[in-house]
Length: 154
Image 1 (cartoon, one colour):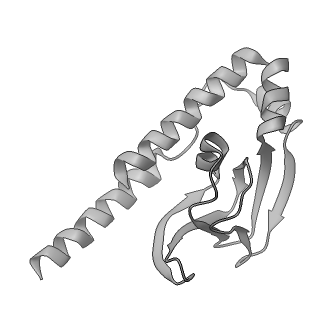
Image 2: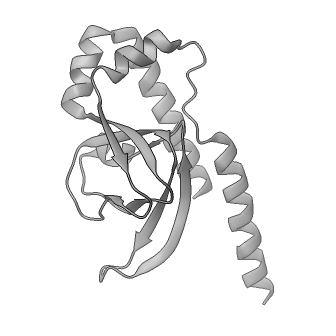
C-alpha cells in the first residue's frame, strides 16, 4: 500500500510540474513571428473525443495546440489503454517526438475538448527554416525544452 501511495504521489507531482512547464517558451515572439510560422502550418480543428494521432502511424509532423486540451495515452500492443500520460493545453505541442526521430507514433492523442491546432510537417518546417533561420533555431530550442521536460518528468 505504501508503494502504491508513493506512485500516486509521484504521478501527482509529475502532473503538477509538467502542466506548469509544458508551454513553448518563446517570450520574444510577437504576433508577427507567430503569423510567419502559421503561414507554413495548416489549421486543424478537432471535436471533443476525436483522435488526432494513433499509435503506430507514420507521420513526420507536429501540432501546435492553439485552443483546447488534448490527452496523450499509452497503449498496449493490443490497443488497450495503459491510461493517460499527460494532458496538453493551448500553448504547447504534440507529435514532436516523431517529428524529430522519424519513428512511428508512440502514443494515442485525442481531444478532451474541442481544440484548434496548427500542423507543421517536416517539409514545411524546412521551408520555414529557409525563410526564417533565426526564428527556426529559436523554435527548435523551445521544442527541445518541451521534450526535455517530458522526458524528465515521465
